[in-house]
Length: 200
Image 1 (spheres, rainbow, N blue to C red):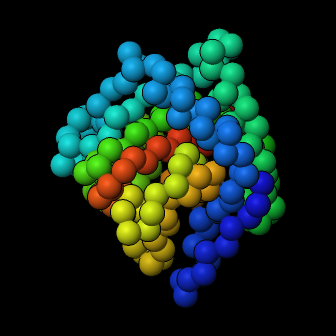
Image 2: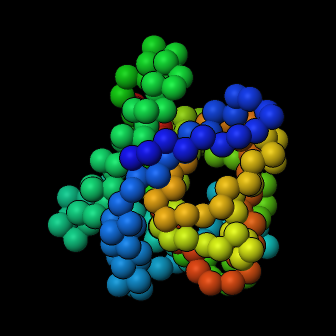
């Protein structure tokens, strides 16, 4: 795991970034996605399916599934994500004073084909049903050429993040980190993404 620093004039931006340095793990997650077409669903947001807002193909995975040996790849992934989260807490030590235990609920693998996007600006905690969310997390599972789009754009901070295999982000779920995913102009993009919640 290697920390990545984004340069910006708007500091601090509280967007943690790393590369988990495990391309095989990323490939195995993509293979899981492609080998389980029966789990594919049209991408949806909290308000339902609307391809003007979000156009993706998703697999949603629930924590109870991780006991199944066919889902072992995700247990391996969460070991890597936990390393990133622990480093995030080291960067912002105040978090240690109130975040003792965390929870990760259902999460998604998403595939973007040419023309797909999540181009509506959105954040991860916007009503009482999402108050438990502390952070969002995401790992890009493959490289996308910069000219082909598919970036994650945090406009408040003037940060545009290009997909690279293994690049992992953690950021606050609050409206201060509203963001959008630009249209993928060519090729494919895969991500794994979800939320870090308060442990109930």
